[in-house]
Every structure is written in structure tokens, then in C-alpha cells.
Length: 389
Ligand SMILES: *Cc1c(COP(=O)(O)O)cnc(C)c1O
Image (cartoon, rainbow, N blue to C red; front, side, top):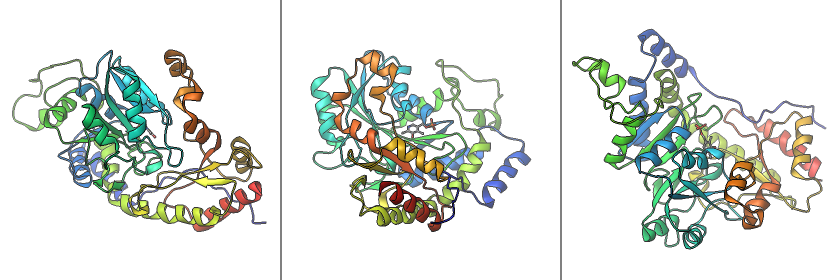
């Protein structure tokens, strides 16, 4: 047996330019939203193929602003998968609207046009859906039976939680390039990071303008404008009770540098994910998510395995044993229909989410990060093989 190694679930990677950019921000004396944020937005919009990219301090803030700017109100309903992080649904509640939870496809863990259509048949008042590109693989938007076709036929908005999906693509181009607004996360363990941060990309000028105002106190000019243009900095107007969601330049400085590395990091994660699939692919007791996009289009944020119901060990056991082996893992996700708040408020029942339940019972996300070595992957795989026998 190999010597014990320590393999964390995630390890942050960076290079020199992150440090150089941070130094430039500190030396400039301008630490809040400024020119690094503007550059980060410009380059992010270019990568996503959208007219606008608006940087904020989290993906949660991005989703809140996107829904607010689209006038989602009390009484409205927004469709979300149950298999996601609570942020996806909580932002709907911020506005007094209600999430409608749906099951996911058994093979991919993703929402589908068919599941969305079923929710539309069963509920009145649905105004939008908020699709989650789980693990970094995009859900099927385009195509005859895709989510976009259903949204267009029913006249509802198509929003995306792409916290896992940068950089990712689909047959229509980069994730974020279609639909009514897509939100990304730069949280500490996401594919690229600013520590905390988020971005919303979209093409509608009116909605973009509302988001720009609401991310900074409902003021009609942003801070940078106020301090760089000729008119007095105190001369601004408040048009709504906005939020404090702007991204500081200190964070954007890291984001700009990470953006340069996003492609290389993605490629590294793909190679590691392929090695996992090669080494574990023959085990009957586990499976990987089925893939609906080409490997090159996947962001490979996560590599979940799903244990078969009759496997020799269950998920919690395997997780504990791997921890003893020095290996960090995580679970994405305990579904929202099981969480006290949503379960009680909406009277949710597990039997209405059979695929989500099956994934939840068996899923375990393995370590995957760009600086991971092939030796580390091999160690994780050998320990899994030993435990799954
Ligand atoms: C991380 C994450 C979020 C929240 O992102 P923040 O930037 O931390 O607000 C939302 N949805 C999903 C699916 C996530 O993984």
C-alpha cells in the first residue's frame, strides 16, 4: 500500500500577476470599485459574448439584482432545481416571490425542458426559471425540447445560475451568451476566484441599467464616475432603495489575473477528471454524471461520483474512510426540498423528487483543482477501489 498522502478537497492556485495587481491597487490608493473592476467586466463580457457584464460582491447578489431588475414580485413563481445551493432559491424569497422546485434528470443531475414544462402545467404564476449548470456542465437550453424553447413558448424568462460554469460552452456558444441573464460566482473555491465576488452577464440595456443602479444604493451614477468626472462628487440622486453589492478593485485585481488563467485551469481540471474516469470507470458500484456536452465544453468545477444503492459501503461511510486516508471530499448537494425552511413552507415531499433523492443518497464530490497532481488522483482512486472492493 502507498504511503498516506494529504489531498485536500480544494487548493487555491494563483500566479505572480495576482500579487502585482493587488500591489497596483494598494499603491494607487483606490481600493473600492474602479478601473480593475471595469477591466474585469469588459473582458468577462467578451468571454461570454454578451453586451454587458456587471461585477458584484457575490453570485447571490448577482441573482438577487437580476431578478429585481426583471421585476420579480410577491406572488410570482420562479422554477429552480431542488439539487442546488440554497442561494439559488433564497434570492427568489428576498423579493417575496416563491420558488417552484423541480426534480433533475437522473443521468446528468440537470434540469430539462420537460421537467420545466411539467412545472408550468402544474403551477399558475410562473414568471421565470433559474437554471443551474451543475458541476460545470451546461443544462440543455437550445434544441427543440430544450429549456429555451419552453421559456419562449410560455413567455417566461430564462435566468441561469452559472456559479459552477466558467468557462463552459454549449452548441450555442459560451454559457451566458443566450437567455435573459446569467450569474457567475468567484467564491474562494470556484473555478476562478476573487475571494468573494460575482458577475451577471446579459444583453438587455434597460435591465443592465437597473442592475447598475441597484448594486450601489440606488444611486444613479457609480462611485468611479462620481470621482472621475468633473461635476461634484456629492451631486448624485437616489432613485430607489438599492443595495451595497459592488465589487471592490482589490477583488477585481485578483479576478483580472485569474481570468487569464481560466482556460489553463479548466484544461488541467479536464485532464484530472479524465484520469479519474479512466481509473474508476470499470467499477460497477459507482458512476459519474452522464455527459451531454463535449468534454472541452465542460467547466469541470466538480467531479462527483454517485454510489450505487447496493454498493458495499454507503456515501457517508466512504466519505469517513477517505477522511481517514487524508482525502477531503464534499457533497453537492443535500437537496433543498429536504431543508426545513423550504420543506415546511412549501410542504415538499421527497417522493416528488425521485432522481434528486437517488443522486443525493449516493453522491460524493472528489478533490479536483488545477494544481492537483496525477499522483494525488491515483492515490484517491486507489483508496476508493480499496473501500468499494
Ligand atoms: C457558490 C454557489 C452560489 C453562490 O455563490 P456566491 O458567490 O457565494 O454568492 C450559488 N449557486 C451555486 C450553485 C453555487 O455553487
